[in-house]
Image (cartoon, rainbow, N blue to C red; front, side):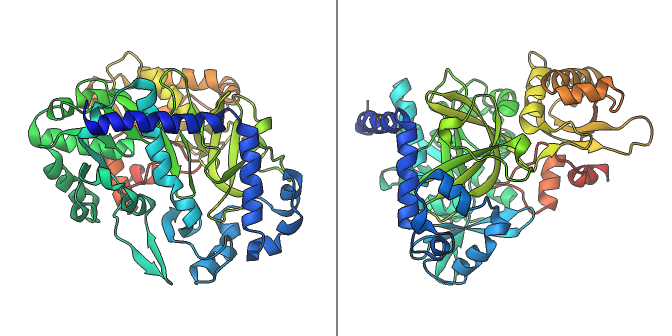
Length: 495
């Protein structure tokens, strides 16, 4: 065992004790976070406008601070972007993380001195927690790669502006810098396809042991490695044994990944966003990721089915229930207050608090009242392909409200790696059966002859990459929505 591996084991034990301390005292931890947030921001413009001086309880908080999304908070964010201090959080932010908003255009998420370190620290803790529970350390001496956005930044009124993954790249600890690939120059390539090709060139002869990124873009990297070397990834990187991912559910990609790698590898799921680092996988035997309760984020939850009602109930961690679809609301040390992140989550455990990301509150199909969510279509796909020789590259679902003939239906756009070997009719039936078993509203609509069973439209190889390229969103942290309540994506494939 190398000195670095030995040190990693000791460090992992220290970090795990800290994790256990707050995980075993979740409510007290969140109450402390709540108090610290209110105290710290009491004299900001937002704090003055919302009576932070008299907020003592969660009930006070709900009374004075409404739930807002980015657009509703924008008047305050714009003041921060223009250079004003003490608006949402004391002082000025260190960075703005630029993201693409579907309704707001470009979004500028503030990252403050208090919030910034939680991103690299939580990612580090996820790996150390894995080391603690598995005892595996052989990967720490090899090379690691994170497929990410460019680390180059610009200036926005005296504050550095960039993509979150590029900003976090500047916080890689010194002891890991020599292990990290690709080079700074390659990471700065903006054209995603050229960047992937350059990464292939830099890494194909290296001892890669950790590979990290959003699954569809890592898949592109793997496919280009194989195309260039004529070797499976696992043979090329004999010591590659840990895949770290986030952004989308890995399960629909797992079978394809194992085919590209040539064997199974361990994986760690993360739940990061520009607005905060919320959870990471802390077990190989149970479902869900451990909600991070001690990193300056106070959580509230609203039942997804109630979200668009007037004055829906906002609850804290102590009142959440298992298997309920919630919209997650956050307040953070970056100055986001009662902020609707847009994600929906389901708790899989409350001792400790673990959750899965079930989708986006705006990403659903309910053209006929069925309210099908991302988790359901992903589960349907997993069940439909299980045990079959079906390799799905990517898919999305949209309603077809006005078909040329017959009843309306859900249209599944699927790109296969081996389409010629797939029985499309049988797959469509398996998908529909699974969806009916999961969603009683969908079942009733099929049984009542309001909808006909779903139909599959096969997307040509590379079609989803073509779509993302057409939107200027190829690579990086971008991903295809699993489902939409309109046909904006579908119209691209219709053409």
